[in-house]
Image (tube, rainbow, N blue to C red):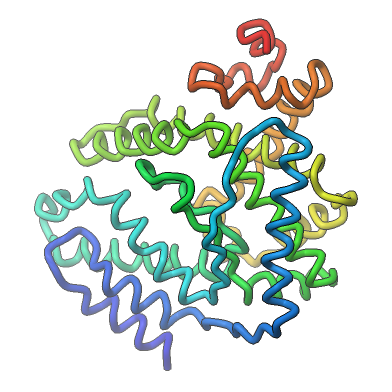
Length: 320
């Protein structure tokens, strides 16, 4: 019945924008079971202690100064969808005028609303943790948030047959490494946001700024690759089994899931992890972990696409 209501809500999408965002939120939540937040005190404290320990360990293995957000929010899937509808709406706002140019604006609005609903519903069932500022420029790091989607963490841990506390801790370490990156590079959020906005503005004007999206892609490859390197250095024990099991689970996804992952670029994100990880592992082996962290000194120190494939080029140019 809830799915029916979701489909009906998309079908009755209204308003003047190219997406009815109220309908997106309502329909995505109707199509997505919220999951349970049945945490006892030990589990709730576990999230907090995992984040504290991750902060200390990451600080020990790097020279970066960074702040872990005071806001550590344990969410269900509906909370995550509600929090991210606003972000999607803000990022895509330059496209609003496109609705007026469509020959059938009402049909285009319903199609766009349905597409965003499917995207947010799928992500809401799959996101494990999130460090907030990736596309939230102009906000001090202290105001950023750290979110964990508890029902997804529990479901994935059980499906992988791994201990829930260990898996939860591994996810916490991953998100804290992102806090360390943005702390080391206070310019990074603006760097990403400006290029994303430039690319979306070009689409709104009927063109494509491939260089803007390519720069975002390259920067995010560095972000994800460095996070992988830091996790290996900071986590108390080898976690190869967790990565292998998580990757095997992704491969077992059905055809619809594989299609959605492809459309959302999730498979591409896995390639980002691996490519970025190989770049930073090479740099760290050649010059040490501190040299790898030199990427965050300024935008000019970010590796180019060619340098990601050949770290020696970056080492010669930057000489960290």
